[in-house]
Image (cartoon, rainbow, N blue to C red):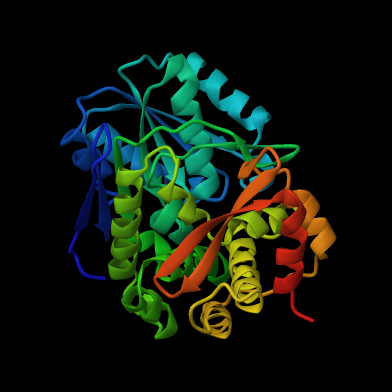
Length: 356
Ligand code: GLY
């Protein structure tokens, strides 16, 4: 991979840079010194990522003058819960982090969500930097400040918005990802293509995501940055980024989180596109094209769960508001719309999107 570092500025308050390129973890200490004085950095990571990158990150931070502590929690969505959050908060207190210190979230989406949430509530909020190591966290979850844990009733039901102080996305990490984990991120990237435009979407049809991932990540982040800048707290436009997620979260929940987020979102996106086409909501035939693109990227396009089971799970989703739920409808590549439905109509939409 080339040494080019692509930088995208996210103009929220505070504003921050997302840097994308090779070798960023081994240089993270010096990169952070450019934006943050010497302090105590608590690196939070999971048991999959710790053996790969924790030493590199801690060494780079120490060389740059930071005091460093680290905490490793068990990997997996089933650990994105109160118990793990509580362990992280107790660790931060034991390590005596103060309000001028910082958390570094090193890992994928679960780590970014958990560590970000801890940063948002420890001492009522301290700084957090995101060091994404998966494609999913690079293209989506490390940017935009959403943090969360899952509750028994559903996914991401407790959390805070906390924009990171910086995001350093080291594309070297992508080379060590198992194919299924890479595909997981491809789902969020394809979703961004459907939302954004033909030219981005076609990069997932022609294999550019695997041949030039840094360019594709930069384009996805630039798109997301624009949305987040216009609607940081998801009052309106940002809800479009939930394309595929109402059904996707329901699939995750029905599977007891054994189906990973990206795979569930891919199936949710394909089901939503088929439903939109069947119900006459699309402006051009897109369902087969989206499904083919997802399949090309190693992703599922359907689910074994029934419309009844998915509807029951989806109605516990945070996108429900009283007796209505807002879904994201793809009209054509590059144009999606929010549609508010009475909850009684969700079953019909999901049933229309299931194959067979
Ligand atoms: N992952 C969707 C969002 O950040 O809004």
